Every structure is written in structure tokens, then in C-alpha cells.
Image (cartoon, rainbow, N blue to C red):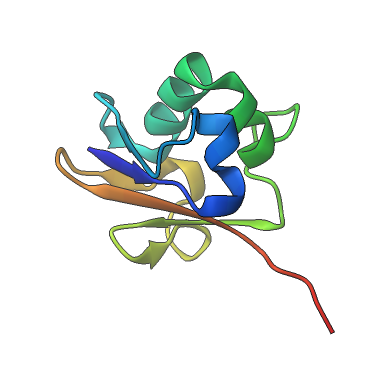
Amino acid sequence: MTVLVPGVLRAEAGGAARLDVAAAGTLRAVLDEVGARWPRLERRIRDERGEVRRYVNVYVDGADCRLADGQDTPVADGGEVQILPSVAGG
């Protein structure tokens, strides 16, 4: 499955825009693998309790995980997870 990384977070993923991740099943499993392989990226996505940070939006196959089952949202083999930090401005 693929994790799409926005430009603002690519430095934490070694410059990669797309990460190939073997884990599937749930978003939590995917983020656990991301954390094991790219710990700096995980710290930008999840807090010290392992929860998705409130200013980070995560989509599984285009659906907001917060409107589904959070980190228990199912992720199919071959699915796509997109990580989008909120952008503040005025």
C-alpha cells in the first residue's frame, strides 16, 4: 500500500513523496510501520500517546479517517493513505 507524503513533511521521509508500506488491515498498522521506518515522520503525525495530531488530516482511499473509525479505519491491501497537515493563515 502507499502513503502519500506532502512536500512539507518529505524531509522527515528522506525526501520521498510516496512511501511503500507492507502493512495493511488498519490505519494504525500502517502508521506503526511508518513509525518504525521513519520515526521523524511519525512524530509529526502522531503525538506521544500515539494519537493522530489534531492539526493533521489523514485520508484512507480519499475518506477522512476521523469520520470513519480513526486509526481503526480499515486499509485494504493496495490502498492509499494521504497525510495532510492543516495549513493556518489569515
